[in-house]
Length: 319
Ligand code: F6P
Image 1 (cartoon, rainbow, N blue to C red):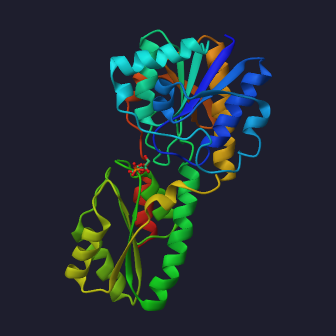
Image 2: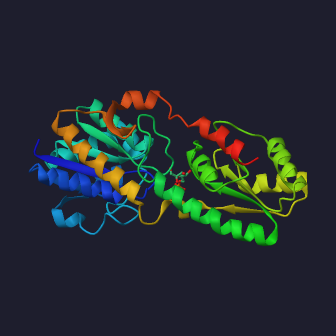
């Protein structure tokens, strides 16, 4: 293999740039040429492809977002779209592709691999919802962003004796809510994997009130439902002064944490090694702090396991 392509696809995640840097530098270390494909699969179809040098990825390890831009591309779900992508890869003499993104992005990588073009996936999404890796790139940074927000909101919750519902991202997964709720000392956490209902939350709020607690923080995963609606129901059921904060896309931005930079560097470099070893249609991951790889088939057919012991622990600690 002489030429490798790299793209980022789907929602951006802090640490994607560190992964692009690792892929690029590791390729150059192995005397491979590396090409950056802009705008994800859309850029692949359009031939928006340029050679990356050592300096192209300088000064990006600390930056959020993605230097290669990202997109969600409907056309690439079709045979024609995939063939256009393969034609572009052939035109540039690229022989292997590294896809940095989430579940949806890996579907494209799997289709290309099935059509004979070797691809490796690097898991990057703030949601931490991918099977075959304990952590995805971007999760730790998003988590820290949420914690900063919870700490700030708690100041106002305390000063005004209010109940706050904070809605966090995660798509259908509860990891961001669970980890931030535990780290932020939330009174209640609602996640899709283990759903407390309104009644449970109300019982906990009342119990707090009885022992003189004047403020509460409830973390709600977006996969459970709307924070605004939940806030209204809490207010109706308890008559407590309730406010809702939907954190939104602030959770996707900002400089990656050290942990995400290290994870991205390890996974990105390993993806290059995998291509060189002749692997294809696989995803690199980190399990128990060891680099591992799994077939994309396995990744799609398994489910990321949210740590429900942590959920029980959060309840024990927020009595
Ligand atoms: O997958 C990352 C994520 O931020 C999810 O947490 C969220 O549900 C979704 O993307 C939002 O997508 P968009 O940026 O297209 O609104």
